Length: 137
Image (cartoon, rainbow, N blue to C red; front, side, top):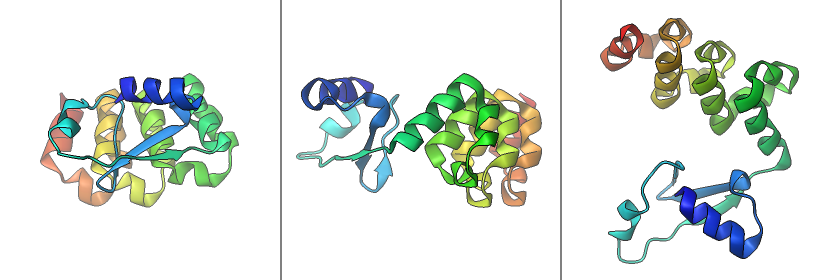
């Protein structure tokens, strides 16, 4: 997918960090293989452009997630930003909105970074065996 985003950048000038590619109502992560989509006869992928605010948030999430604390509260509702932040520092999960603390992919990224971040996941996820095992691994 990251290669597809680079190709889109060459044609449109839209920087890859500004691109969100949506297929079948889900955002395609950069690490996903394009081969998975090529097995479908005519896959339709939608390009959604991130706002400059979201691009800033993503940059901060990677460079110094704690700078997100100086941004508006809505930053903690942005799934891509929160995922990047908890991947950088699992402790960032404590600031995520309740729906995102209940998102297994986000909680998993947080506990992979720091097992102690499990305490900030939703109560439902704290009882999830996959998540618990990852936290103690």
